[in-house]
Amino acid sequence: MHLLDVVALLVSLTALLAYANHRLLRLPTTIGVMLIALLLSFALILAGELGYGVEAWAERIVARIDFNEALMHGMLSFLLFAGALHVDLNDLARQKSIIATLATAGILLSTVLVGSALYLLLPLAGMALPYVWCLVFGALISPTDPIAVLGILKSAKVPRSLEVKVAGESLFNDGVGVVVFLVLLGIATRGGDVSATAVAGLFALEALGGVLLGLGLGMLTYGMLKSVDSYQVEVLLTLALVMGGYALATALHTSGPIAIVVAGLFIGNQGRRFAMSDTTREHLDTFWELVDEILNAVLFVLLGLEILVLSFRGEYLVAGLLTIPVVLLARWASVGLPVLAMRRRRRFTPGAITVMTWGGLRGGISVALALSLPAGSEARELLIAMTYVVVVFSILVQGLSVGAVVRRVVHDAT
Image (cartoon, rainbow, N blue to C red; front, side):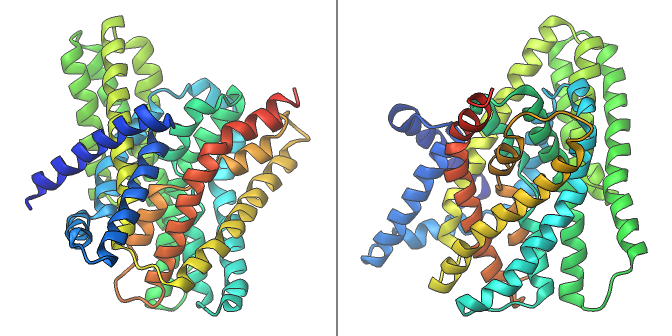
């Protein structure tokens, strides 16, 4: 099949699953389509076990889709821009200290806690990994996924200040997580030590370079938006900002996600207030809301179908189930310690630690990073399986219950 045929099949399948979810399950679209896609994948696997050839056919189609490439260098820029476009910069500034702490120190603490716990626990399940590979897993599973988080927060009715903390952290912590992941992966695959200077240089290039590039591109696009009054041209300019900006960031070896988030925040605040007419704002919001909804649905269908091409041995499943409480406890500690330290100076919503722990969903970014592990490495298949189990639990169980958690620990307390 040609690539266009694969895309057409994927979009058509997504539309059918979204329709089925709307008519039958009535779950949030992202969760509903992923659940149905998972059930469809299991049905295909069962059909293959019974001697029908549909599983092999479906596997060949899914195998043609490079999940890492499709997300990290395709969908991610659009989804991050659409999410950042509607975040109020003033709200973000008021929460900047906790967001910055969670997106940096929180990621590092979670990485160490997850890696150390797995290094001690995996031998109990009959498996063992070198400590550095456990840390690699800690780095790829620690960032909360902005795509999953922003989608779920829309329907969870989280208090505004708490929503800004969770959304703001998820928009920025993936950039830090990717840098930590790359450093640890380099140590695991090449051996030897990486100096603090090299790590600081990589972080500065990726993170700070991404901020500066995003700010520059946002200001340039803002100036162009302000000089015209044609919603068709202005929507096209934002589309060029997302696609061209992410490609430029990749070419310059800076963080594309951070650059797009910063540009999206700038356009969504300064651009919305001072460079757009009411007509342009309406069309821009409608366009990016549609892009967000469509790509989110496609991404979660892909997550559900990806099980067709993954290796799931019994011990891998056990390791994945063992990892779920480890990741949740590490998240609780990496959120709870900063919040408790700052509680003397500022007020937090009742139940903030619980909501930020349970609402810190893992999603496609963790799977994409796991799939980017080099083929043939000793830990690849195990880490991919563990990642997938954690992500499925996070989206289906945490995603479906976060509204109930908010009602219980926040609304009841107030």
